[in-house]
Figure 1 (spheres, each protein chain N blue to C red):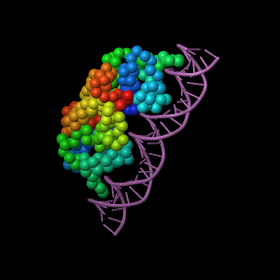
Figure 2 (cartoon, protein in one colour):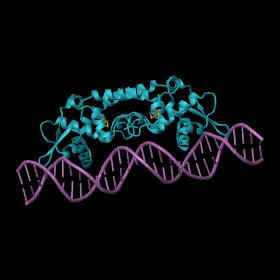
Figure 3 (cartoon, rainbow over the protein chains, first blue to last red):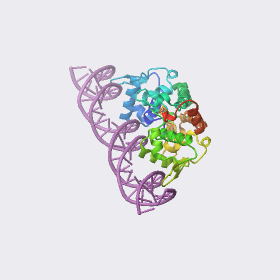
Figure 4 (cartoon, each protein chain N blue to C red):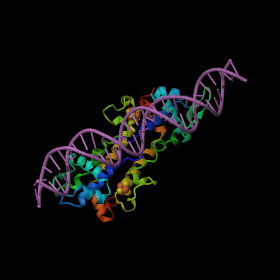
Length: 144
Length: 144
DNA sequence: TCAATGTGGACTATAATAGTCCACATAGAG
DNA sequence: CTCTATGTGGACTATTATAGTCCACATTGA
Ligand code: SF4
Ligand code: SF4
């Protein structure tokens, strides 16, 4: 049972790729190939990242994508929540038709604590951290 | 995007119910009514909990379910993993066809850290804790 | 023997996720 | 101006996971 879904995984790889290629416009095709992501699916993901304000897009010939924020201003929690919706341990934390038992339920306090810890952890990790890790030792999801 | 699924939520409510009614066999129907869980679905859940060793079952007239372990020996992580499968932040932590990029990927170190924190938190919360919270202040998921 | 109960497996339904397609908008190059 | 490379938007399909149901059967106690 996984928490990070493919679209988020792909998003992160794409963002790392963009962060590793600053100052130019990178096409979706290039990212798709380097990061081994189905192109048309990646296009959808990039659209979402664009709407979310993480990347900018330039249409037309020689167009492409670029980071719209500094890497240190993009954290994992934001990306996850953009792609997968608000992080909620249990449905009681989702406003719309959350749990009708919530008012009298004491179990949810435990969930709340956990949720805060996870959110805290994820929001501390920035794209800059990831890029540094990649530069130091490895590859962004194995991408070249 | 929720982490705890209904089957786990139901499981926890059922376990709390059993813990609140020690020393007797509680029928699935009773739990279903008290905890507002679809009966036949609950039966499946109880079967899984039985196979998982958390509850015992007695067939026949006047049969029912009872806790097979002390409440302090049942923790949330165990229940979650029984119902939802192994907790894994990202697919790289699932052995069978996990990510083929894993060997050279540096991003997964972050996931690993998070996973360990979540697992640590969840494994510290026992059924006894939940029952005490219910006794002190509220209701187990609102159940009577 | 009967009624109350759990068991097991197959089955259906619903929803979420992943992935695809196509017509269109835009920008640059010639 | 037109052609080509690109991103955009929305509808669409496919696949998988989760939720929920059904029924024949096994077991136990009265
Ligand atoms: S019963 Fe409690 S823990 Fe469960 S979803 Fe409702 S409020 Fe949350
Ligand atoms: S690319 Fe890295 S983080 Fe992503 S699933 Fe593979 S090993 Fe895990």
